[in-house]
Length: 133
Image (cartoon, rainbow, N blue to C red; front, side, top):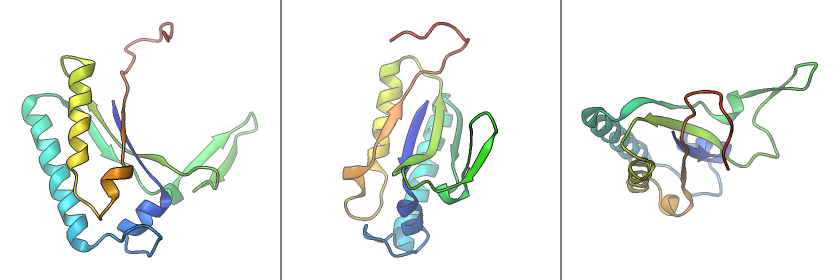
């Protein structure tokens, strides 16, 4: 699984709300959309894409916690970054999944975006077995 992250501030900037980060222009947003469409199409063509989704902004999050099922609406002040989207890929190796994730650094956006962006690559467990460290 390839996981990408963003903050509420990032979502605000993409939506045209002023933040202290570089603003997203309509051209930036269109370029990102075109990149993601091509990126996903290449994974479909190679047969490696299982599923991909972008997630709604943190403000639309609810956290359920505790035995009494306390529900708290987001975003959460203690959380800087949250899961923004994911790709589930089925490929020949962990290294190949890492190569796929590295292509995300080519995603266009406002100046300086690439320097702070990152993705995590994590294997999915097929069964509830012992966790190995």
